Image (cartoon, rainbow, N blue to C red; front, side):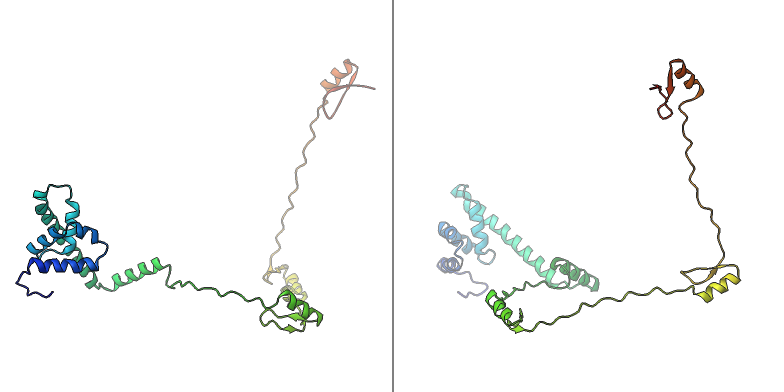
Length: 244
């Protein structure tokens, strides 16, 4: 239904628009059937200011209010819904129009990459089922021929023995040869095997461990006491033991 911007359509035309809206929005069919006449009246009174969504939401909120004040309260709530919806759409449009400088663009790119999990977009690749070409029957046939089954092609191939590659050990570089040792000896020095230079001799004393002195348990006094008892002192324990 096309109308001029200054003329308000009749109530019948508003009802027809509401029917088309109901056919397009099946989710709100029950709410529209419940408040069909009241929706049409409010829309007719505020045709260019309110939308059907705002009026339906307002009437669903105002079901418990008395019928005398219900229409008035519903129109007020519908106006509030319309203003909130317009503000939200305006804020979204302003965010889209803002491009920002280089720094803001870099920040946005960084956030996007963090959400995605890095610069690389991770695509789920479906793995194809691996076809087993060398089954038990095929292996037996190849074994009878004295061959081996190739798992990629499924053909019987001859055995190829390959030697394992052994890594050659690096020989240590001898820096102190006989000639170098003689030169260092003439200078009264010693050849350093790591650097190959002639260094002065450094005499280091060997650390000698101190011997622990044995603890004397049978002293003269203890021996006398054991002798009076007709016994002998045991040097390991320090006790008086009978002589067998």
